[in-house]
Image 1 (tube, rainbow, N blue to C red):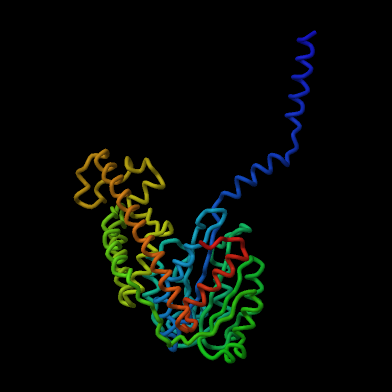
Image 2 (cartoon, helix red, strand yellow):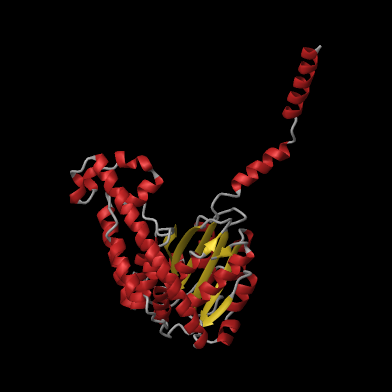
Length: 381
């Protein structure tokens, strides 16, 4: 009798388990998806016509501030994947058949490349087709499609927004269909920005409208922590072990971009050093330390001939030991920079409350990114 009862119970429980509603399974799947990294994608479209040297200089001066603002964002406790794309438009040195537009970089997380390409921009001529460059960015860039992704376009320039064959209204409408928000930065008088339809483009694109004096020099606030951060930046550079066909080139470019940042100002150099201390500064494509974080077995695959000379004759075990030591040292240096950076930012925030600093290219982007982030459910740390 007991065996019959046990059999009946077994059949009942088995049937119940087989008929659990699929909603329970879907819930677990959704929980898994929620742990995936969100993307923050920022496309920057810069007017490179004759009168925009000041704008380009402001972009160079504020690049690392913008990146440092992006690194403060968290989604579900995780740092999102940060991607930046660069366009230049309005430069008559570009083909008229392509509407005087050039994509300088697609979406990338390679921060040194972004800096390199930004510093290579030169200005010339003046046929600024805003509608065309927005449309090209919307259609050509690899935009994310997840609801948690934040997708932003910033277009900066000074002539009327209506130039060219592509209607800015249609381009903006196309962007909104992909949940890409359009922000405009007019370089000049506020009312000229309104009459020139820069504000209308931002309103239609559900973004922000700014007007700036692009010829104004960016104002930095020096702090007592700057020299110490630069000291640690030098130590940080010594923890990189290049590898691969382009390892030496990229390793050299790291120092080149340090020098580019310093050419703007000492404070700008510090901003770059702070960016380099963050997880977003990931050089897995040429640095063996970052690569091993992604692929712990790569130590057995790396072509030893592409490493710096002092590592080429090491055994794989010796190389692993060196990588472990370098990785530990890098983490310690990054922590030192982060601690100093927090104190530095507190100092800057206090000074900025005392001074009246007007919007420039970088401040406009930084403030609006934080606003959009809160709307999208990102935390700002």
